[in-house]
Length: 91
Image 1 (cartoon, rainbow, N blue to C red):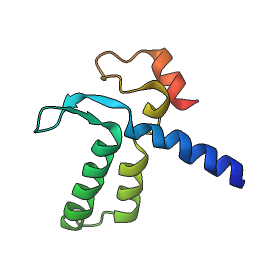
Image 2 (image 1 turned 60 degrees about the horizontal axis):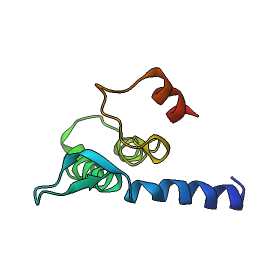
Image 3 (image 1 turned 90 degrees about the vertical axis):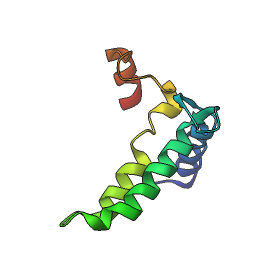
Image 4 (image 1 turned 60 degrees about the vertical axis):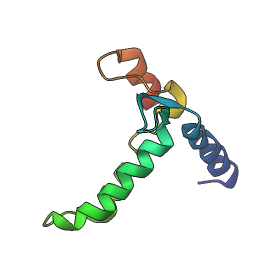
C-alpha cells in the first residue's frame, strides 16, 4: 500500500474513536466503535486459546477489522441496516 493511501486509511479508521454505538458502557455513556473493537479483541486474545484448532492470529485480525465500515456509515444496528448501508460499508 502506498504511504499516502496507508495514512488516509489510518485516518479513516481513526473515526471509529468518535463513532458511538447504539449500546452503553457500564458507567452509562455511549460506547465508541473503537472501544467495542478493543474489548472484543481483548476477549479473543484471552479466550481464543481455549478453543482447540482456532487460528488466533486470524481471530484477532477479524476482531480488529470487523467494524471498519462503521467509520463511513456509523453504527447502524443490524435490525435497521439496509442494502444501502451494506453497499456503503463494502465500498
